[in-house]
Image (tube, rainbow, N blue to C red):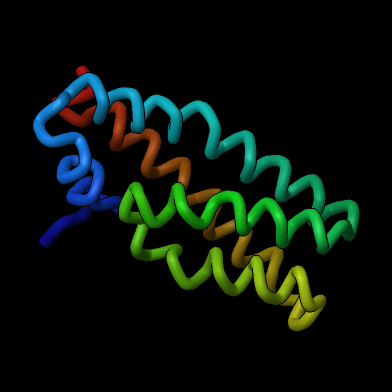
Amino acid sequence: MNSKPYDLTFVTDIAKGNKEFIKSLIDVFIVNTPAVVNEMIEAKNAGEWDKVGKLAHKLKSTIDTMGLHTVKELIRFIETNAKTQADLVSIPQKIEILYTVVQDCIIQLKKEEVYQ
């Protein structure tokens, strides 16, 4: 069983053996994703739900590309509900889960052989 919170199958498939390309995609994830999640937290704290929705939308493709299957539906829930301002009470907890998964991914991605 894969205990990693991500699955790099798609990334390795599109890289076609180019380890530098894989490393660059991991770098982009490590640098950009936490900043977007933190921005989402700030927007949530300010009650800027439209911005939360837009930031969730921005993260969707990254989450899909990096194979973060545990938060695939969660990011879509955040996006849809923030934009429609439905079930807003559930969004903060879902953002916290997203934050935790992203942090866990970063720790583990830095240990990947291709990243060394």
